[in-house]
Length: 397
Image (cartoon, rainbow, N blue to C red):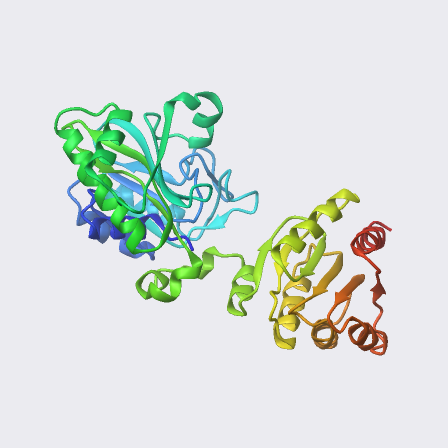
């Protein structure tokens, strides 16, 4: 689960991390009052969406000469005008895709005098099963570009969970970033606080880009992006309360409410599979035969008829879906349960596209009989290769 920048900064502030003074604005008429609560003389007005590249982004409704989703204002009035210009409009960045995202929140904060821009991130390293630091002197730009063109400017290391965070980790970061004097002590303190926030709040990533050195020689988190482990949200009610459902794909949101593992993609063949590995194999073979999957959907090993019905409804709600492939290998999941769920869903929402079903495993004969006796226009398949060929042919033909 991701949160907005202003929420991330509030979280970091609660752990003692230095951030700029700022105010979140949800309505245009609140902007002037919010900006007037800060000292100035420079205000930064930022669109709040769950995507990077806001500064270089463009509004779909933009007029000639209008800037992106991060702007500098030199007066309270100008800051309020900028907030009004952004609210309710659609911002397109390299991370949102061409559809963009509607800006429903604005963050206005005090400007900062910047001497240097640095990069700092904590994330879960799946190879080592540890929390890892990624730091670079090249802050203020996409870390992917740095990795591609100047990888030697990136330093990364993990923290042994047996020892936890230690002062030498902070000094290692300070050395990598070329910090000196009082900045080293500040860095040690900063690293300890961010690591504590990461662990205590079950974060998956904390990215500060840029981490700046001010003209006074102090460290400050100028931007912040934080994501959390969805599986741990049950023990983080304060974090769950920050969830902005308007930033999430409606289909993925609906799937999460039924404990379905669903990720929307850009293809034309909807997939319903049990098991993450089988789901990925199904997507691969669809691509092998010349088509693109419209989603990743794992109904899990213990899905009920109701969950299968909801999964089918989510797939059919995608206007890009031109065909559906159901691929079930019944172990814990019984094939007859899948069959009953498919029939219930089709009766409820209808079937406007080709449907190929491949069943194998527990109660497979019963599952096939249920579908055969249903009278539905379902294309049966004997194995995964056969299923993929048939759905691709049905969609392409």
